[in-house]
Image 1 (cartoon, rainbow, N blue to C red):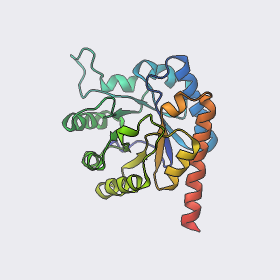
Image 2 (cartoon, rainbow, N blue to C red):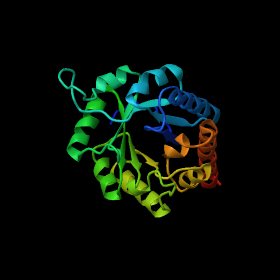
Image 3 (cartoon, rainbow, N blue to C red):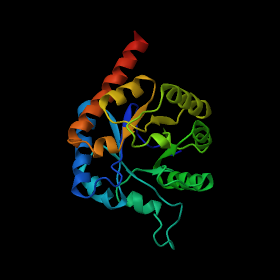
Amino acid sequence: MFQGFPLRAPFFEIGPKAYLVGQDVVDLARAADEASERYNVDIIFTASFTDLVPVAQATRRIHLFAPHMDPIRPGRGVADILPEAIKAAGAVGVMLNHSEKPVTLAALKKSIDRADEIGLATIVCADSIAEARAIACLRPNIIVAEPSDLIGTGQVSDMDYVTESISRIKAIDPTILVLQAAGISSGKDVYRVIRAGAEATGSSSGIAKAPDRAAMVDEMIRAVRQAWDDRLAKQNG
């Protein structure tokens, strides 16, 4: 686990995937940057490789992540994604094992080790609770507990999955942050998941396909802040 990553709960992850390109991605990143400052919520922004540099140049507060990398070293490797190249482009971390870019557990361990070696944070996706437990043993910075059959459907995980996945991951390593995702399409979804005990959530199509993307970012980040504050108030009440 890369120890120097300054992320605080609650946080949120935005990944435009291939829904947006070029200036639309930069504009969304700027909206996220502004919302992060407005509500004092950390945001991970996972941009495509071709958008990393312009997003890094246009923002100052979001945590910029790449969507994948290969555990190679400088040298031969045509079309592979070099970890050092990701860092040089301005990213501070990398997403691994997304359902749209799965890797084997052995390759995942090599990638996490390489990221740790050069100072890149890791956010790793897990479908089932069993997979989340196995990934927790590899000690990434963040695990995304995300049933793949719910991605992009607008249907969120049930609360039993949310609470059990968190408890199982924390039992292995309490320092791993847990993000609950899949199907997040409104501020109400965000509020519900954070209030249930998640340290973070995130959205891709729910933001990228919204009629007003900046307004949806504001709605969701505001919901993160409100849910977290309400949760703390209840705990301290």
